[in-house]
Structure formats: C-alpha cells, structure tokens
Image (cartoon, protein in one colour):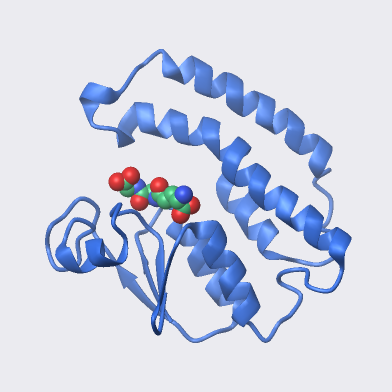
Amino acid sequence: MKLFGMGKSRSFRALWALEEAGVEYEYIGVEFASKADNGTNGDMYRALNCQGKVPTLVDGELVLTESGAILNYVAAKSADSTLIPANDLVRRAKYDEMMCFVLTELEQGLWSNGKHRFALPEEYRIPEMLKTATFEFDKAMNTLQHLFNGEGFVIGDEFTMADIMLAHTLS
Ligand SMILES: N[C@@H](CCC(=O)N[C@@H](CS)C(=O)NCC(=O)O)C(=O)O
C-alpha cells in the first residue's frame, strides 16, 4: 500500500491507522498546492485525487480518498480483527456513530475555523465565521460528552479506529 500525505493534516490519522494495523506500506510525502512532481497540483497526484487533497491511499488498482474510508479499509486489511467491530452489531453501530459524528459534526467547527483563518484563499475568508465556528464546535463538544465519557476506549474496552479518528481530530 502507498499512502500519500503531508505532515500535520488528516493524512496523519491514516498513517497512525497503518501503524496500528501492522500492514506494509510506503509513505509518500506530497507538497501542498505545488505543481512539482510531488505536488498536490501536479498531474500525477491529481489523477489519483482530483481535489488535490490528502490523504490518498493506493492499494494495487484501488485508489481511496476520504480518511474515514481509509481507516475502515486499513482495519479490514489488518490481521488484528479488533480494529473495527465486525461480529457485534451493536458495537459496530456505535463505531459507525462515532466515525460519522466526528466527520460530520465535530470536524465541522474546527475545519470552518481553519478555512476562514488560513486555508481558503484570502478573498473567500470571512472573519465573522470564526464566531459561528466556535459556537458549532462548542455544541459538538457538548454532544461528544454524551457519546463518550472519556474513560477507556471509544467503543467499549478495545482500541478501534474510532479512537484514532477522535484523538486525531481533537489534537
Ligand atoms: N474529507 C476529506 C478531507 C481531506 C482534506 O480536506 N484534507 C486537507 C488537509 S487536512 C487538504 O488536503 N486540504 C487541501 C485543500 O483543501 O486544497 C478526508 O477526510 O480525507
């Protein structure tokens, strides 16, 4: 497997997942917004990921974008079958709930904050969005406390990819 990523970004959660899974992989660092051979705007990378975002995982013919999908795929490839609940329907449902919650609710306020502080081209940044983003993040953090009390692991007493998703997002 090959993971294309960049330092402090969502690719770190995919890198962490590969390490936990104990699978063989090669990490290929890319450079944001560059048209160079290793750049996210270069032809090679755009052919893999049309948005020029990270992470991207390549496994043979499979090209996978979206960090949540990558975590689930890597867990399924691992010899360690505990990284994603497989046989217990209730644990799997709670796992999916946390993955979806982090990606759609918790990340939203954080990402809006990042986008309007540095990620978007300056002409699209709206300073007033920061107040809204903080409001939304606080709401999501309140909900998180109902989903997970912070003790042990996110899903019962075993470490899963949901721990990576939540810990990486909060960090
Ligand atoms: N939903 C995607 C988001 C990926 C994403 O936005 N990655 C950021 C880095 S954390 C990126 O590549 N941004 C570059 C850009 O927006 O052009 C995922 O979870 O993988």
